[in-house]
Amino acid sequence: MTDLSDSPLRILVLSNMYPPHHLGGYELSCRDVVQRWRSRGHHVTVLTSDLDLGKGQDDDPDVRRTLRFYWDNFEILKPPFRERLAMERSNQTQLERAIDEAKPDVVSAWNMGAMSLGLLTSVGHIGLPLVLVICDDWLIYAPLIDAWTRGFRRWPIGPSLGKKLLGVPTHFRPEQSITTGCFISETVRARAIGNARWAPARTMIAYNGIDTADFPLRTPEQRDWRWSLLYVGRVEERKGIGVAVEALANLPQQATLTIDGPVDDSFMPRLRARIDELDVRDRVTFQLSARAELQGLYAAADAVLFPVLWEEPFGLVPLEAMACATPVIATGTGGSGEFLLGEVNCLIAKPGDAGGLAAAAHRLANDPDLRNRIVLAGLTTAEALGVDEYAHVLEAWHRAAADRYRQGEPPARRPIGELLAPLRDSKD
Image (cartoon, rainbow, N blue to C red; front, side):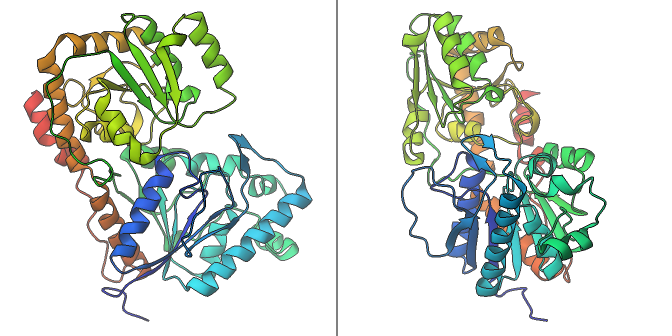
């Protein structure tokens, strides 16, 4: 067996989306990590879907956009059986071709929502080590929406017979003994272990982080409060945009809200109707900025709102805002609550509480000292949670997986409690 303890790795990355065709932080983090792995000498091939969001051409020869995807404009697709079978066979062919040409030491699977989960089953059948980089709850929801494998749960045929009859895996059954789960937060890991039909036996926590090349730590500035509020992220109901709009209606007339991100078309009619009902249309701006523009956008805002309603897996937007020396008002749900410390590096409002969100904005507006304390603690938080360390930890675990853990498990990322202990101590 080849010694992989020091040599460059050959890594095959699977993901449902990959920039420039992407919707959120999951895909951007994948690219950030791939770029860092390549800069360290590893050969990384990316196999992703043929999704085209009209964001330009990709000239990376090692990114293969050939997989078919059960998703279109926020809608989960449920094609007829023959079409699904053709899609599965096509995706399996593309996987086999990528493995044959890339000859990976390890397969790295990122966002697999609405993807052919049989791809992961096949990786195990081939005997390749598999590392799942899990940044949301797809281990729970992906099997429920997979148009192919979910249809075989109640069939009398088992996985072996199904594969023999149809030529493709019919069940989501990765090989546990050679699969590792690298979770973005303890929240996501606990939910997966408690609720997923299948979960890897070997798991660890690798807290995500921001790219300080795109979001360099900014020196705080003393400036007047102008009531310029900002939301960045996907525009969908569970992100709490409606609550932010409700809060805006309870703020002074000069208060404005910029909403920057890709839009869920099914949600927008209700949101616009609520904006009209509250008579704040002239105070709300919708836009979609390139990533390179976000640094200036964050820095120009008086506060960034992160009013999510659901159990957020982690949340990069607050960290990006913190790096830009902008105070954050958040709900602190799910994994984001593992690094968002109320009254220390942010202000916290309860999910769905528009009044609490507005009250937090008033506190920041009226207390420059509070704003300064939160900004300084936010800069410390952003510095502690960078993507460079994230890529380094993931690299070590992919190397160990490729080497079948002959040298044992590498260190995980330092617990977030240790990273932020000085901030908690300062609060006490």
